[in-house]
Length: 196
Image (cartoon, rainbow, N blue to C red; front, top):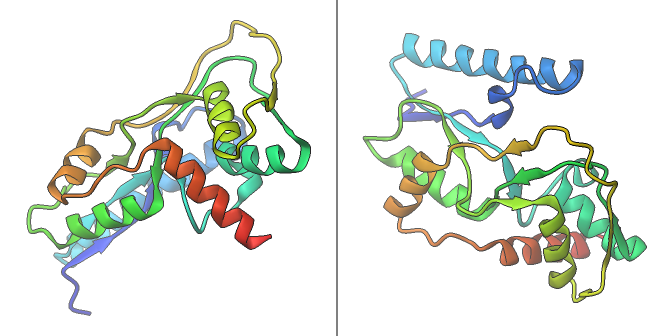
Protein backbone atom coordinates (compact mmCIF):
# COMPACT_ATOMS: atom_id res chain seq x y z
CA UNK A 1 0.00 0.00 0.00
CA UNK A 2 1.00 3.61 -0.44
CA UNK A 3 1.75 4.40 3.19
CA UNK A 4 2.98 7.78 4.32
CA UNK A 5 3.72 6.65 7.85
CA UNK A 6 3.06 3.55 9.89
CA UNK A 7 1.97 4.17 13.48
CA UNK A 8 3.07 1.28 15.67
CA UNK A 9 1.70 1.57 19.21
CA UNK A 10 4.01 -0.01 21.75
CA UNK A 11 4.17 -0.08 25.53
CA UNK A 12 6.17 1.63 28.23
CA UNK A 13 6.92 -1.90 29.43
CA UNK A 14 9.91 -1.95 27.06
CA UNK A 15 11.70 0.16 29.69
CA UNK A 16 11.07 -2.51 32.37
CA UNK A 17 12.45 -5.74 30.93
CA UNK A 18 13.77 -6.91 34.29
CA UNK A 19 10.71 -5.83 36.32
CA UNK A 20 8.12 -8.13 37.87
CA UNK A 21 7.50 -11.82 37.45
CA UNK A 22 8.11 -14.00 34.40
CA UNK A 23 4.89 -12.96 32.61
CA UNK A 24 5.67 -9.22 32.92
CA UNK A 25 9.26 -9.75 31.84
CA UNK A 26 8.15 -11.82 28.82
CA UNK A 27 5.64 -9.11 27.86
CA UNK A 28 8.36 -6.43 28.04
CA UNK A 29 10.71 -8.50 25.87
CA UNK A 30 7.91 -9.19 23.39
CA UNK A 31 7.10 -5.47 23.06
CA UNK A 32 10.79 -4.65 22.50
CA UNK A 33 11.04 -7.38 19.86
CA UNK A 34 7.85 -6.14 18.20
CA UNK A 35 9.25 -2.60 18.04
CA UNK A 36 12.40 -3.93 16.35
CA UNK A 37 10.36 -5.95 13.84
CA UNK A 38 8.30 -2.86 12.95
CA UNK A 39 11.47 -0.76 12.57
CA UNK A 40 13.10 -3.40 10.35
CA UNK A 41 9.96 -3.64 8.17
CA UNK A 42 9.69 0.15 7.86
CA UNK A 43 13.37 0.38 6.93
CA UNK A 44 13.14 -2.35 4.29
CA UNK A 45 10.11 -0.66 2.72
CA UNK A 46 11.27 2.97 3.10
CA UNK A 47 8.17 3.85 5.12
CA UNK A 48 8.14 6.38 7.92
CA UNK A 49 7.52 4.89 11.35
CA UNK A 50 6.01 6.51 14.42
CA UNK A 51 6.24 4.49 17.64
CA UNK A 52 4.40 5.92 20.64
CA UNK A 53 4.95 3.93 23.84
CA UNK A 54 1.79 3.95 25.93
CA UNK A 55 2.01 4.06 29.72
CA UNK A 56 -1.19 5.05 31.54
CA UNK A 57 -4.37 6.08 29.74
CA UNK A 58 -7.78 7.15 30.95
CA UNK A 59 -11.04 8.30 29.46
CA UNK A 60 -13.58 6.47 27.32
CA UNK A 61 -13.03 3.03 25.80
CA UNK A 62 -10.92 1.79 28.72
CA UNK A 63 -10.51 -1.99 28.69
CA UNK A 64 -9.15 -4.55 31.13
CA UNK A 65 -10.70 -2.36 33.77
CA UNK A 66 -9.78 -4.45 36.80
CA UNK A 67 -6.17 -4.87 35.68
CA UNK A 68 -5.24 -1.19 35.95
CA UNK A 69 -5.41 1.14 38.94
CA UNK A 70 -7.67 3.87 37.54
CA UNK A 71 -10.50 1.60 36.36
CA UNK A 72 -10.15 -0.71 39.34
CA UNK A 73 -10.33 2.19 41.81
CA UNK A 74 -13.48 3.59 40.17
CA UNK A 75 -15.18 0.18 40.21
CA UNK A 76 -14.16 -0.54 43.81
CA UNK A 77 -15.35 2.86 45.03
CA UNK A 78 -18.76 2.38 43.44
CA UNK A 79 -19.13 -1.26 44.42
CA UNK A 80 -17.59 -1.34 47.90
CA UNK A 81 -17.45 2.28 49.03
CA UNK A 82 -13.71 1.83 49.60
CA UNK A 83 -10.50 1.40 47.66
CA UNK A 84 -7.88 -1.17 48.61
CA UNK A 85 -4.32 -0.50 47.46
CA UNK A 86 -2.22 -3.66 47.66
CA UNK A 87 1.15 -1.95 47.25
CA UNK A 88 2.66 -0.89 50.59
CA UNK A 89 5.31 1.29 48.97
CA UNK A 90 4.94 4.31 46.66
CA UNK A 91 3.57 3.64 43.16
CA UNK A 92 3.69 6.54 40.70
CA UNK A 93 1.76 6.91 37.47
CA UNK A 94 1.15 9.67 34.92
CA UNK A 95 -2.18 9.56 33.07
CA UNK A 96 -2.99 10.82 29.59
CA UNK A 97 -6.53 11.12 28.24
CA UNK A 98 -6.99 8.73 25.34
CA UNK A 99 -8.58 11.42 23.12
CA UNK A 100 -5.67 13.80 23.81
CA UNK A 101 -3.23 11.03 22.89
CA UNK A 102 -5.10 10.29 19.67
CA UNK A 103 -5.03 13.97 18.67
CA UNK A 104 -1.30 14.27 19.35
CA UNK A 105 -0.31 11.00 17.66
CA UNK A 106 -2.42 11.64 14.54
CA UNK A 107 -1.05 15.16 14.25
CA UNK A 108 2.53 13.90 14.58
CA UNK A 109 1.90 11.10 12.06
CA UNK A 110 0.96 13.64 9.39
CA UNK A 111 3.98 15.88 9.94
CA UNK A 112 7.05 15.40 7.73
CA UNK A 113 9.34 15.77 10.76
CA UNK A 114 7.61 13.22 13.00
CA UNK A 115 9.83 11.67 15.68
CA UNK A 116 11.89 8.87 14.15
CA UNK A 117 12.63 7.21 17.48
CA UNK A 118 10.08 5.66 19.84
CA UNK A 119 8.69 8.15 22.34
CA UNK A 120 6.80 7.83 25.61
CA UNK A 121 3.17 8.91 25.99
CA UNK A 122 3.50 10.55 29.39
CA UNK A 123 1.46 13.28 31.00
CA UNK A 124 2.96 16.24 32.79
CA UNK A 125 1.33 15.36 36.12
CA UNK A 126 2.69 12.48 38.20
CA UNK A 127 0.37 10.99 40.82
CA UNK A 128 0.98 8.44 43.57
CA UNK A 129 -1.73 5.77 43.93
CA UNK A 130 -2.86 7.09 47.33
CA UNK A 131 -3.48 10.52 45.81
CA UNK A 132 -5.15 8.88 42.80
CA UNK A 133 -7.55 7.05 45.12
CA UNK A 134 -8.46 10.35 46.81
CA UNK A 135 -8.93 12.01 43.41
CA UNK A 136 -11.25 9.16 42.36
CA UNK A 137 -13.29 9.70 45.53
CA UNK A 138 -13.54 13.42 44.82
CA UNK A 139 -14.59 12.81 41.20
CA UNK A 140 -17.32 10.44 42.35
CA UNK A 141 -18.52 12.83 45.06
CA UNK A 142 -17.27 10.47 47.78
CA UNK A 143 -15.04 12.80 49.78
CA UNK A 144 -15.01 10.44 52.77
CA UNK A 145 -14.06 7.40 50.67
CA UNK A 146 -12.06 4.89 52.72
CA UNK A 147 -8.66 3.94 51.31
CA UNK A 148 -7.02 0.84 52.80
CA UNK A 149 -3.34 0.18 52.33
CA UNK A 150 -0.71 -1.86 54.16
CA UNK A 151 2.01 0.06 56.00
CA UNK A 152 5.18 0.88 54.06
CA UNK A 153 7.64 -2.00 53.83
CA UNK A 154 10.70 0.00 52.86
CA UNK A 155 10.71 -1.42 49.34
CA UNK A 156 11.50 0.42 46.14
CA UNK A 157 9.23 3.02 44.58
CA UNK A 158 7.42 1.86 41.44
CA UNK A 159 7.71 4.55 38.75
CA UNK A 160 5.79 3.72 35.56
CA UNK A 161 5.71 7.22 34.16
CA UNK A 162 7.94 7.54 31.09
CA UNK A 163 9.94 10.44 29.74
CA UNK A 164 7.28 12.88 28.58
CA UNK A 165 9.51 15.45 26.87
CA UNK A 166 8.86 14.36 23.26
CA UNK A 167 5.14 13.85 23.94
CA UNK A 168 4.74 17.22 25.63
CA UNK A 169 6.53 18.88 22.70
CA UNK A 170 4.23 17.10 20.23
CA UNK A 171 1.24 18.15 22.35
CA UNK A 172 2.33 21.78 22.09
CA UNK A 173 3.00 21.51 18.34
CA UNK A 174 -0.45 19.98 17.79
CA UNK A 175 -2.04 22.93 19.57
CA UNK A 176 -3.77 20.43 21.85
CA UNK A 177 -4.82 21.27 25.37
CA UNK A 178 -3.56 18.88 28.05
CA UNK A 179 -6.44 17.18 29.84
CA UNK A 180 -6.12 17.48 33.63
CA UNK A 181 -6.27 14.41 35.85
CA UNK A 182 -9.68 15.40 37.28
CA UNK A 183 -11.27 15.26 33.83
CA UNK A 184 -9.46 12.04 32.92
CA UNK A 185 -10.97 10.43 36.02
CA UNK A 186 -14.41 11.93 35.38
CA UNK A 187 -14.46 10.78 31.74
CA UNK A 188 -13.31 7.29 32.71
CA UNK A 189 -15.97 7.08 35.40
CA UNK A 190 -18.69 8.31 33.03
CA UNK A 191 -17.73 5.75 30.41
CA UNK A 192 -17.72 2.91 32.95
CA UNK A 193 -21.10 4.03 34.31
CA UNK A 194 -22.52 3.98 30.79
CA UNK A 195 -21.25 0.45 30.20
CA UNK A 196 -22.84 -1.08 33.29
